[in-house]
Length: 222
Ligand code: ADP
Ligand code: ADP
Image 1 (cartoon, rainbow, N blue to C red):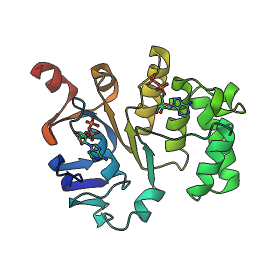
Image 2: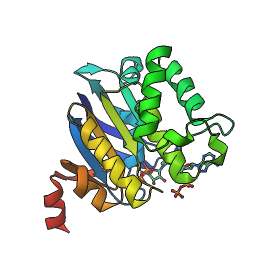
Image 3: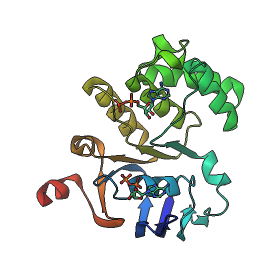
């Protein structure tokens, strides 16, 4: 589905955040693990075409989208680490605005947004302003926005941060369902996230892919 081919990223000032990573995303959940500063967010921004790599290519179904991200963005859901909210909008208004921006028709969006808000447990808060939401609630709005265009490729940067155990279990169930037909990649530093739902794990350290395998390999390795 989505292939990252020999990606490097050197930031202004010369810091090499990603030093040559190739990674193929297929249906299923891939957990991206690694310490702070390993390069996970940078890699996910590049996979989501929210940032350009210094060298390397991003392929969608074999077609190079590195410099022409539009086809990918239509079929992509992305939760960045620093997701921005509009405090004066309600959850429903905010999702409607983003759905329109992604080209989802108004009628389809209305139905989809109602379903998504229920799925992430915000049905009762749908018409409240985001400014009054807790961190965990905002995170769930962020997850809902990533799914609003029914994407085939879903990239979530630390989606479980700030969620309580019940919310986390609910997210795991949702992602497991989606992953039957979609490529889902999530970065986390919470090993149980990976053990619960990831069919595969990739471990990144100092900008390099140091392990790709099954969650069981990871536990055996630690
Ligand atoms: P992770 O998500 O694994 O914590 P990041 O991709 O956020 O890692 O960061 C990798 C490295 O790149 C870190 O050393 C970080 O300080 C640096 N970095 C991240 N974003 C930028 C940026 N916009 N400009 C310069 N350096 C950055
Ligand atoms: P936690 O500390 O439990 O991880 P946070 O309260 O920091 O959760 O919030 C989670 C996410 O919501 C973060 O991405 C943060 O930037 C965002 N966020 C938190 N409060 C606000 C706010 N008042 N307005 C906009 N975004 C917010």
